[in-house]
Structures are given as C-alpha cells and as structure tokens.
Amino acid sequence: MNRKTFDKIASVIGLMLGVFLLVLGGILQWGGNFAGDQVKTQLAAQQITIPADTMNPKATPEVVQFFKDNGGKIMDNGKQAEMYADHYIAFHLSAMPTYAAASGASRAAAAAAAADPTNPDLQAKAKAASGVVETTFKGESLRGMLLNAYAFGTLGQIALFASYVTFAGGLLFLILALLGFAHLRRAETDSVI
Image 1 (cartoon, helix red, strand yellow):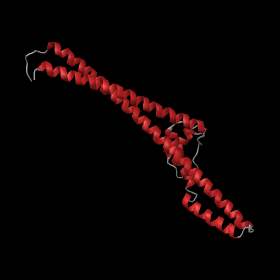
Image 2 (image 1 turned 180 degrees about the vertical axis):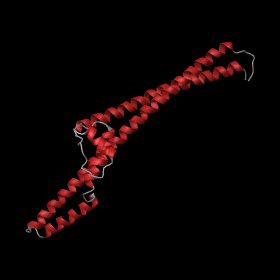
Image 3 (image 1 turned 45 degrees about the vertical axis):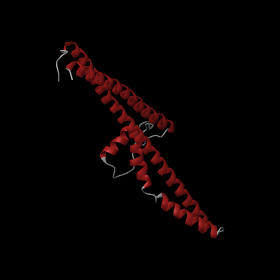
Image 4 (image 1 turned 90 degrees about the vertical axis):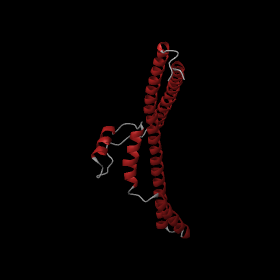
C-alpha cells in the first residue's frame, strides 16, 4: 500500500472516531446532568432536613463531621441521601425488629386479639404491633429509596467523568486526523509502507 493511501485511510478513521467520541461525550454529559438534576429535584421536593447528629454514640468521626456540616440543610444530593440512609435511618432501625419479624409478631398479636376481642390488653398489643410494622416498613422503604437516589446520582457522576474522558479522546483523535491530513500534502505519492 502506498503511503498516501494509508495516510488518507488513517486520517479519515481518526476523523470519524473523533466525531463519534465527541457525540458520545455529549450524550454522556447529558445523561450525567439529567441524573444529577433528577436526584436534586426529587430529593429537594421531599423536604427532608438532615439532622446535626445521628444519635449514634459509635459513629465514626467522619460521619459525625458530615452530620455537623450538613445539619439543618434540606437533602438534595446523593451523598446526603446515602449518609442519611446508612447512618441515621439504619441506626434507628437497628433498634427495631426486622420487617419480617415485626410482621410475624403483628399477625400473632392480631390473631390473639381476634380470638378474644373483649380483652383490652390484647387489643392494645395488636395495635402496638401493627404500629411497629408500619414504622419498620416506612423506615426500610425510605432507606431503600434514598439509597436508590444515591446510586442514581453516583451513576450520573460516573457518566459526567466518562464524558470528560470521551471529549478529551475525541479532541485528540480530531487533532491527529488533522495532522494526518496535513501530512498527506507532504507525503510522496510513490513511497510504499
């Protein structure tokens, strides 16, 4: 193959790769911005105020500092959602039975209350057990939703970082393609590689 043909092929491929990477970078940046905006919008709409303290005496200094720094703020990003879910909700739920255990206890208490509907103690226990199920369910559900927001926000950040790398690669290929086209003018037509 002669040198000029090879340079044309390499330059055109480089140009196409550069354009492809720039388009891909734009799509990744749009996806990253979309994820970040959605997390912020959805979390801010919930108006969850981050407490200044988790009440956990075993919290690490980093966790304590995070809650001090963010205390009183309205949650609006994935990191805040993760910290609130893992270090506030999870700590408080750890003092409660699991949802499965609470549900089983509630069913047993409801059955006992149904067997003796005139017994006020059994009725009170059934109501209390039902309240524990409701609290556990709500806490675990909120924790799961916040961790999903954290995951979605993290994927958005990864997409943004990937867009930067992709833009850099696209620009590099465009520069190399332009250098290849410039080299075409100087290449000897009959040189062979």
